[in-house]
Structure formats: C-alpha cells, structure tokens
Amino acid sequence: MSEHQPATWDIDQTHPQYHDDLVVGLSGLQDQEIGLSFIELGLIRNIQLEDGKVKVTMVLTTPFCPYGPEMISDTQKTVEKIMELPTTVELSTDFWSPAMMDPELNDSDWGLFP
Image (cartoon, rainbow, N blue to C red; front, side, top):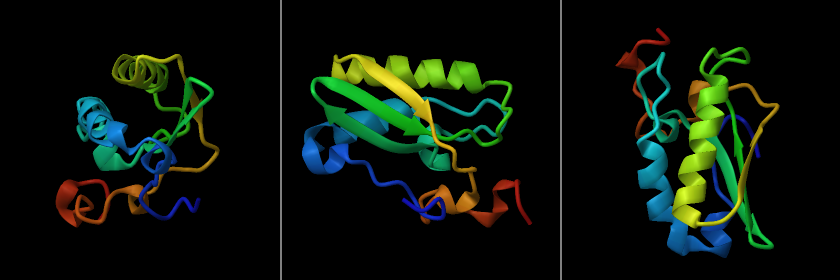
C-alpha cells in the first residue's frame, strides 16, 4: 500500500459488517496535538481479521509523537471493544503525510500546511 493514498482495510473485503462500527469508534479518537480524528488523518492504515484475532496497522503523525503510546493503546482498546476479539496494534514504517487523509477531508485550510 502506498503511503500517498487513503487507507484501504482488508477487513472491508473479508468482514464488511464491521466497517461502519470501526469508523464510528475510531472517529471518536483524536490526535491531541492536531485536533483531528484518527480517521480524518488516515492514521489507521489497515485492519485485518484472521484466525479470531484482529491486527491494526497505524501510523503516527510524527515518529516521536509524545502521545504515541496513548494513541496506540486507545486504538487497541477501541477496536477490541468493537470486535470483541484480541487486538494488536503495529506501527507502520511509513511516514504520515496529508495524502493519507480521505480527499474529502483534506482541506488545505486546516492549518498544518500552506
């Protein structure tokens, strides 16, 4: 998956019935420094369900985000609550960019970039 596009989740193909609940749940989590949700920012890069376990791949807006551990924990707890299955969160080696946001949510007036 290219880092320069909105995320596509494997779970949408294998278990699409979870999509809306995951979007709603993860939209409630915000990057505390930027004030936008994990979904708006495109931080959740993939969600996979295999063998009764959920694996979430995410990125942080900066490699040394001071809220990183909390964001990872909040993601794990939120997905585990929705899915009612053991959940792990792995950080992607990709660097976050505004191109990861949904094009409908990528507004040049939101303050980070000219």
